[in-house]
Length: 339
Ligand SMILES: Cc1cc2nc3c(=O)[nH]c(=O)nc-3n(C[C@H](O)[C@H](O)[C@H](O)COP(=O)(O)OP(=O)(O)OC[C@H]3O[C@@H](n4cnc5c(N)ncnc54)[C@H](O)[C@@H]3O)c2cc1C
Image 1 (cartoon, rainbow, N blue to C red):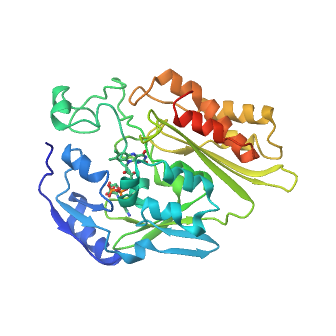
Image 2: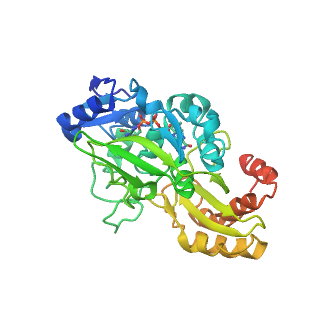
Image 3: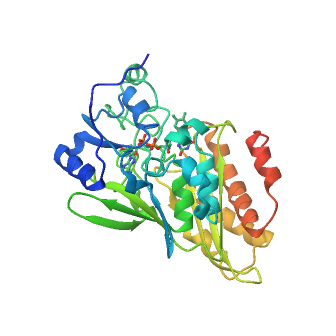
């Protein structure tokens, strides 16, 4: 049985108080929301914070508000996000959140926790004894990356489902600390580095996600995983587009997840759609451009070359769904692993 290490537990009731504790305790303190990722990580000694600062009692992190667009509190559970009526126009977010883990984990896991999710790797997501037997790895306790042995950079991969979806939607993230607050485009929250995967400082709390108005936009999220029932993504494709009345694409964004240490936009692929209708040829061109940016590593489930190969197919599925094709059969086929 894997046991948790000892830790101090603090449960503030406001963001200001939580930020004060994080500032006072320094990098040995970590926020905890649902704990669905952090607690298993602590059991495996990936992370060993001296103090956990629980965000669960902070009501302001659960707010949902309209204005120009939609603001979602980082403390909303994924189940709350899925069922939030105001979030329904943001199809990609709903589809991504609904495909995270299982019902139980979505009832506990939060949007903020999902966006700050630790990166994953075959050589890292193992218990302490397993990791010790290979003399650990670059991400934690060791000096070598077993995936790319010459690499000075950890290549553990970003495995959050909601981040690519929200990046394609054009969301912004608000970070609050004891001394300041800032807002940044969600894609700018991430570094392509398996260790320092977030630009969030240890004393900052992700408080809100701001989504732009959805009017005129359609968005979708497609996920590749081994088991249709539940599994982390080994490829995530999110696409969003604003259409003119005649079906011409006026604006578009395509984001990829689980093929690097960060989720990222592929502007060239999106540009290939603008000013055009989504014909099969236009979709094929954008899919090829997007897939060329997918650089999966041999550190996750399913064959590396096959994952790279199907990236274009998945971008194609996403764009065909945006075009209005009925893709339910394809989704079902993927969920049943008939690829
Ligand atoms: C079996 C299993 C399957 C899973 N499958 C998936 C999957 O398919 N897709 C997927 O995306 N995830 C998956 N997860 C991971 C996890 O359950 C979800 O990502 C969940 O949304 C994490 O949210 P949480 O609130 O539990 O985060 P926590 O575990 O509480 O925190 C995760 C990280 O985020 C930080 N954090 C949390 N909230 C904030 C905040 N507001 N501000 C700053 N930092 C914060 C924590 O310090 C920690 O580093 C899975 C987990 C398990 C155990």
